[in-house]
Image: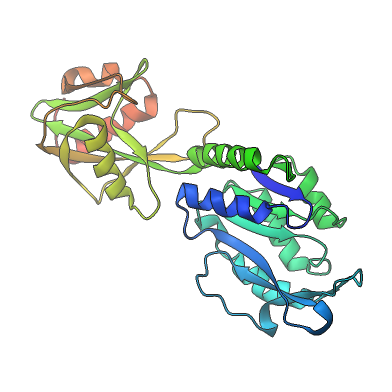
Amino acid sequence: MHIFLTGDVQVGKSTIINKTLAALKIERPGGFRSVSVPDLPDGAMSVYLLAAAEKAPAMGDFNCVGIRKGCGRGIEKFPQAFETAGVQALKNAEQSRLILMDEVGRMESGAARFSARILALLDGSVPILGVVQKIADTPLTNAIRTHPNVRVLTVTKENREQMAQEVLRLISKELDRTTDSAGAIVFRGDTVLMIRAGSRWSFPKGHVEPGETLLQAATRETCEETGIEAALLEDYPLPVPSAREDDRRTVWFYPARYLAGDLCAQKREVSEAGWIKISDAAKRITFAPDRAAFLKALEIMKISR
């Protein structure tokens, strides 16, 4: 699900986006931002399209997408800037955790490639957090509003504080469904480290945090969930689909050997942790793809059942 905000000018839509990024520690989102700069006579403002991840973006004719003339005098559109700077800003956006589109309005009319790229991303799995201009009535803005993967939220002065909390909740949920996890299948002698979450037996794992590699996340999560330090085989990550049907993430398990630490289950997420006999482990594993990864790890580590 993608989230687009709408509402009156200066009601706080971009502020909500900034708060969401800060709370989720997303420093390099994909996508774009647009900024209006009062650099023209008679109160007119140039509108620049900037790549969302740029820390010190440049502004010039190449990314000036339009002019807001003010005082009811309308707008002037420069679609070619969308077709160059805009398309470039969306290049490889699928590789980011979250895509920004702040904002989409009337100026994109006539920018066919840019519009097509936005529609393609709406069909994708990476969550989008954007703004759709309230007064815009164009094929692109209407396609966004009616897209089956889009939820449009209206921000007002009265609800913007509550809306900020709701947007954070919704985007956090989407990231949870789309952000890969990493863990380890840790062997010690004739045993393997296993955890139980609810009724399901598997191996320690957790979400990859921003800036982490899969290997770093697997090492950290194993220690956090069980208190065990392990030496992971970094060249052999084993992919497993999520056990939740509505997830679009992959879980990566690394074969590993015990290094140090006393077993201590993280009670918040783990019901039980233990060193299970290798000969009994396959029968305990609830999810078939987890079992396949376990058997492959045995093969890689040259351990007999």
